[in-house]
Amino acid sequence: MLVGGADRVKISEFQIKDVVNVSDGKRLGNIGDIEINLTTGKIDAVVISRNGRVLGFFGKDEDIVIPWKNILKIGQDVILVRYKDHNEFIEEQTEV
Image (cartoon, rainbow, N blue to C red; front, side, top):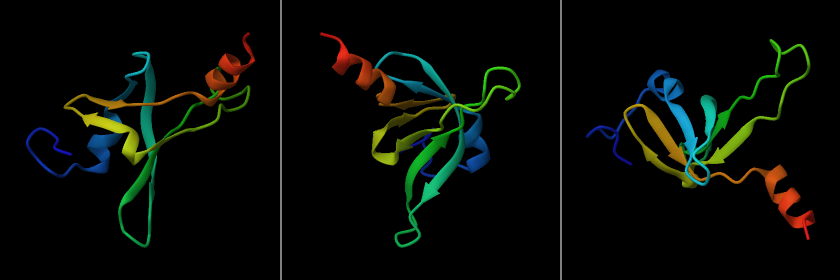
């Protein structure tokens, strides 16, 4: 995956890019962490931390884990991903 003509990106640069879901165009947030496969040394997934509503006082939303295979494009300012919210999936199944 090429990023601006380079084949490398620093984690500090990776974390400031907005992550956008191509399925609905919504901004999911910024990458807070990565999951690395220690056997292969490759990134398995990126984690988007979702903070609670009011300075974290009222709990914390679940983190969003995006498998590396679901990252479609890493641009200069944006990372495009394909993500289906598990809660949306449950709601769609219950609607008749």
